[in-house]
Length: 146
Image (cartoon, rainbow, N blue to C red):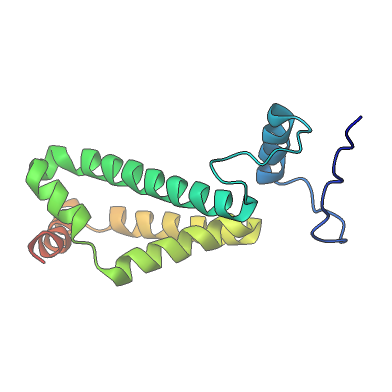
């Protein structure tokens, strides 16, 4: 009779619960069962976590770029949309990434960032449509030329 190895306890702190990712983790755990196997190509769980992280980030980036190009294609054409998406500056990428991270970390962050986006949208709509469109076109044209 073989003994099952005890599950490792990385921390003795009680687990925080109630978040969406916690619920997702429980679903994945239920699907994989109480196996003592390390799922993934490596026997090292840390390596499998890195592999999964790279795959998820690459897939997310590919999906995001595809959606962005699709949204811009109607007004700016295929090559213009591609240039706009691919010529985004590091600063623009970092700011949007940081804002998204802040918004997803807490409810107050989501409210703050969401409110800021609503205010910006209302401000843009308050300006004349022609002026707002011209301003947006100039910004995207600069991005396409870089």
